[in-house]
Image (cartoon, rainbow, N blue to C red):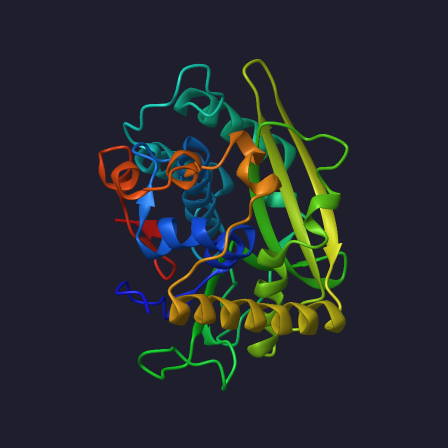
Length: 302
């Protein structure tokens, strides 16, 4: 059994990493090795989410006008982006993010947006939806015996086209022909729907908006992805099975390898060099990686 503690709290990030490659999961989320510089896509996406949350809270739960709420969101965007150094030729620089901010509210004005926050049990608009729930009563931590927790954060629970919806914003660099269809089986959103239904919120669909931030232009798209009871039950059963398999790897002290497309997709695996070596430890500990711990509850790395 590994000397590194098994995660008690899981989210879609951890599950996705494990099913892609258990060894990658071990190195990135058990031992916490990361790129020395965080991904600009993750950094920009978090800044964008913070800005939208600030704006919607100001507009829907306070007395701010749309213009004032958007201004508060822009301040939050700049503060959250901070002095992050974007890579050369990156599209998601602070200047381009600010341009996208102005574009977004021309495409989706707050005053006339058909997506509206769903009222929660306390009557307040559900501009954000955070949850942390036991995944299954018989899925227990291998060391402590505590129930494994599944957590996540949806941008909003909303009403749209007469249905209660999970709502999510995505920043991207392209909105090709397959952009909308990629969400139909996305476990991230099915997990959100499972959690919402655990709180008796009758979610039946996902509304996703995408903003493509390019060097010379900005585009947008919107799509709906349905989640039936079958989809949610299927997700839950599979998620439990996946974490049981991770527990088995942990107990055995051996993490399976992908040895397929995952090794080269999305520009190549972060751990290609140590994985190809018969002695990976010098690669992992020799300064090629930074140690940053992903916290699923706060959605931050420290």
